[in-house]
Image (cartoon, rainbow, N blue to C red; front, side, top):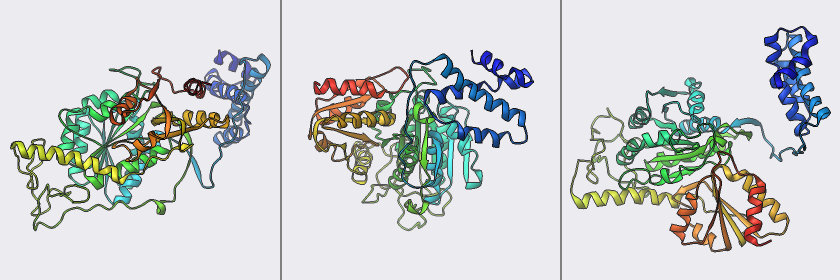
Length: 471
């Protein structure tokens, strides 16, 4: 019992019971330091700085932490301890960052690189709420946040902000994605830039709000009525959330499309050292607002991107219809003609398909060809990377492709799959990416599925790898 042990350790200091009980977190931290065989010096310095001017609290917290360490050493409370070497980091300035913090900073950076206002319309939901909390602190950077009364109001407010010329985002989790479905179709129809962040959690329904899962992939790909294709991206690590937010914003603005960005509870609340980038190295995101009324047509296409003009309401001469009814090609008038509808459906699909020419090829980590290729996405990246490294050190010929772009997929992925004798697809679901790969590439891939609200362990992956390789 942490509270009892902390009280015993600090009973001689004369602190009141409330203050003593608040020190139990440092007792637990001391236990963690013993478990992972790490020095407490940095935390001791932090305590001395945090409680400067309160010597009794400094002494109490330091003593509680040391008591936790000593308790483990004396009682052998844990059967094993772990030795984790320092991370091998490239030179630079680092900060600790969580996935949701990185998403927020990525969207702010994107708005600055595009020269437009950032708007977030969201309804609070675990584990996505931190994005709204984080962005609400950046009003001085031209960020507007709106806490809506429900998920439908949240996404439609974002669509309205995009119509008015903002980089608009909305964040949610699986249950909220279900409620946003009709408005997602509206965003596809009106062809406006929008980023929808789905921070996945265990489901269905309310499910496991505080546990992680990767089971919204098929919902992101297909969860709308009719033919309503949307680009889908997924972040791999907490720090990668920053770069994925930038990429999602770039695609949304350049192609005038809604984009779904998938993260999950493990990334959202997990943290890692993140090298602060040099902003001068991040490319600009040029935005062209239509200004010239001469020859203006609201659905006249850019021949390279198939995007339509971004015309801000109130611009003289650029008045046009907007809404969910089918539009006539070029003019944007409401149109029910069968051939026009088919043309618009195919144009919207072709626009998303064209993004495939604007994303990087899949490049396997490890062996470029061999006995086994692991194809994965999202937060499984860390454990897979460690497992592949350990197996390659044993002489196994293994590659690892971790997909950021899930729709469209990298153009060379089919060729990469052919270079390996076997394919393994680990996912925190029942095999959703596996289903996509089998359907699209007709490959005999094998899944490794875990739906426990917990991430993969390295050992679980290594056991499956050795089973597939017959060793």
